[in-house]
Image (cartoon, rainbow, N blue to C red; front, side, top):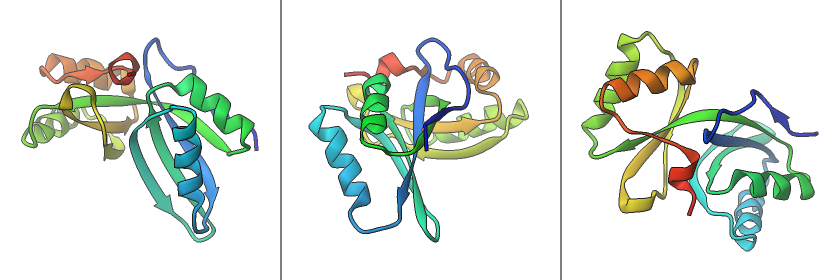
Length: 152
């Protein structure tokens, strides 16, 4: 299966890879080890288990290199643009969800960053309208982060 890009990403947009892997012991470890061996850092990760496969969602520091590695090692995947938000504290999550509800923007799913430069927390959000969501969040003094913010 060739990878599929859902939409041409905007300048400096955060790219999420959704990797389809056989649901067997060690497959996630294989993927993590492969990226690590090529000095690609996983900044956010979420895994969904289905009956016969897993969907591993990843945000990495250098998506262009990760894309090449995934293709060379025959990992089927697609990629989408997502919104990253930096959080100063857990209460700020309410500000994020409130701003999006008021703008009537649907959240498809959300998961945390595991690593962030400057030691700040952050979340990855898949939304129905990334551009509008980014504008709304910025108007509400919520820091939207870009791919360059997570590159090392």
